[in-house]
Picture 1 (cartoon, rainbow, N blue to C red):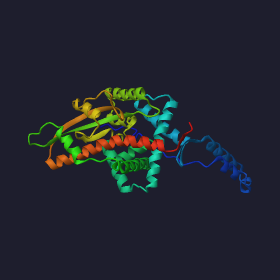
Picture 2 (picture 1 turned 60 degrees about the vertical axis):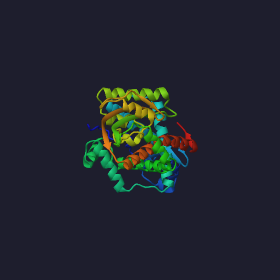
Picture 3 (picture 1 turned 60 degrees about the horizontal axis):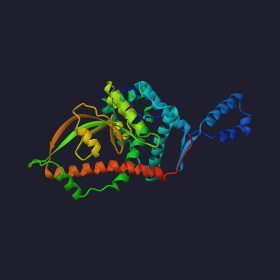
Picture 4 (picture 1 turned 90 degrees about the horizontal axis):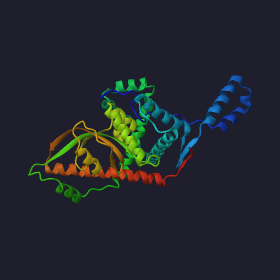
Length: 345
């Protein structure tokens, strides 16, 4: 896998909140400020001007998203698109799409704080090592590439930590909403072709790009963006780079779109059906599922011999994963509807 210059779609330089302009003016009017050198007054005036340029673009429950944060995220997206020759929607539309993603992040991070969730450095380093390996690098090489790309490693670590916190929230919430019964397992096994006494499962190693439908990205726009990603791949672009730029499946996008080995029943029917028609190293057309549009590539297939007990457990896990993916979308929509969100773009 070739190394791309920009390593993480969402690796951002988190900016601190600015002091209010009113607070700065109050300091300037104080007695001690009157005795300060003229150069200090000039610096304070410039600082106040910069602060006045910042503003709140969204209120999310008891938190806010600042314009400086939104601009930083947009700049990151634009930088990646420029480096990889991608096309972006008009600035206003792009801002809406990026802000909507930031709103969903903020909702989930607030839930993580309320639940006192955390990610320790050992877990974080393990995830960073996984990301580095998916790019064909050691952890030290990954750090060097991050810094060569003009990002601070500390900022990238913080962004990955945020992603891991959101994943914890999702897992805690979804695990309470999904169950798989013995009857579900039996029904699935009965629908499979007869094995004539030999139990095996065919697994597929695949990767994908997912373009979701969102309040700011309708059916036609999502399909067009998925087709754009597919064209880039057909022209020889690195799959991992395209996934990190285009994919809304943030878990797999961090690993270059990789899904690992997928078992029957683990993905939704539309995805599994399309995946079943592909040869190794073949790209699918944009495939519509309840999640949006997928561009899928099958890397290889294998048959795994398993005992009957092991097979049943694998089927149970596969059914759970598929239902969890479906439920995640429903849960995120519910969280978005229940949250107080005031967009001020």
